[in-house]
Image (tube, rainbow, N blue to C red):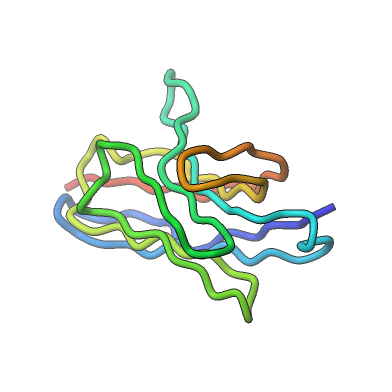
Amino acid sequence: QVQLVESGGGLVQPGGSLRLSCAASGSIFSINAMAWYRQAPGKQRELVAHITSSGATSYVDSVKGRFTITRDNAKNTVYLQMNSLKPEDTAVYLCNAGSGGTYYFTPKYWGQGTQVTVSS
């Protein structure tokens, strides 16, 4: 089992920035990629970005150029830097630890989620 703890959500004005963190513990040897999903009310859960153990990254088109996913392997932590936030970015953001390559990600373990609200 892998346990994930997210932090960093909150309320921000349009155009603002937030940084989400996700710390992993437990059987981390069983995973080789981590990701951020989001789910807005009434919408399907969406894969926002993922990063492999080698550092390869992939993003959904709607966040390219605004969001950056990084990881600190020494701390078993993945980050999502979100800049130029828009109201449509409002959602619960969920961290996931699973398996993946440059162009695919298979989710396995979920965090509890952190709310991001973009509003003036």
